[in-house]
Image 1 (cartoon, rainbow, N blue to C red):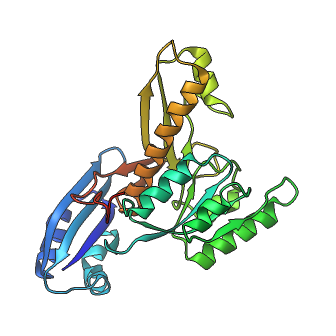
Image 2: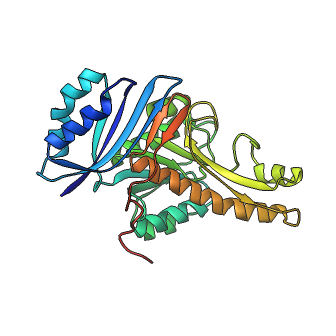
Image 3: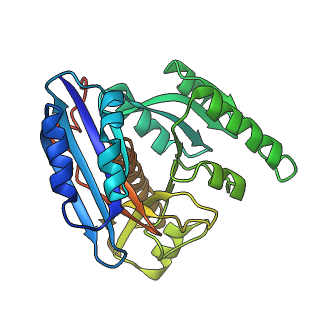
Amino acid sequence: MTSIALRVTCPTTRGVVAAISTFLAEQGCNILDSAQFDDQKTGNFFMRLGFRSETGATVEHLEQAFAPVAQRFDMGYAFHDEARKMRAVIMVSRFGHCLNDLLYRWRIGALPIDIVGVVSNHHDYQKLVVNHDIPFHHIKVTKDNKPQAEAKQMEVFEDAGAELIVLARYMQVLSEQMCREYSGRIINIHHSFLPSFKGANPYRQAYERGVKLIGATSHYVTSDLDEGPIIEQDTVRVTHAQSNDDYVSLGRDVEAQVLARAIHAHANHRVFLNGNKTVVFPPSPGSYTSDRMG
């Protein structure tokens, strides 16, 4: 039996849930999990359902058959085959902790993505990536060649069929054109717990202020630097006795975990954009199960 996810957004109105449930039942589908949120402030309704087709109904058939229901409620909707992994390209510079973590999770099947390429403005991780049988693309970026470099990057994305671009500590600011072209499909990890400490050395800023919690934030990329809709955040406790280097090491662990959770949520179709914010539903049962361990 095929496991399928249905995402729905529409204006808040009576009868939406009943209409969706009735449709799925009539199509021979059994709902396994469901999450919904009614934003009283904006009047927007969000819903994600996981279900199985017990009659062999395909995603294509369900998309067509659902159209009249969607039209009645002015819905935006999408059906997703949960066995299909999202094609992702990772971008990295000279900090490799997030890249290494993602490669490991990808190798054991703990993330619902297929890494189809890695792009970097340095050669540091070329051997690591190639040893995983993943295409590595070195594209140097300077102040003078940035438009040409971004054109090459976007060519890589298109050739690879990338549905998601992950900035795994990629230390270059993306242009407004690229942010607009891939809106809602670029995820960044910011090495601080926004908006407390920004800039090049947030851990040193935190250390000098004597904070007791440091953290990381993963968000969608927009043309407003580090201001995109937040997907995932986490913190770790620190003490007065720890050094700036301790802050950096602990922070890198949090960064890797937060980025992986954000990617999992996005690739599992659990994240909905809601203006400048996001709606992030809990993971479906079994969605963190790895294909293999080790």
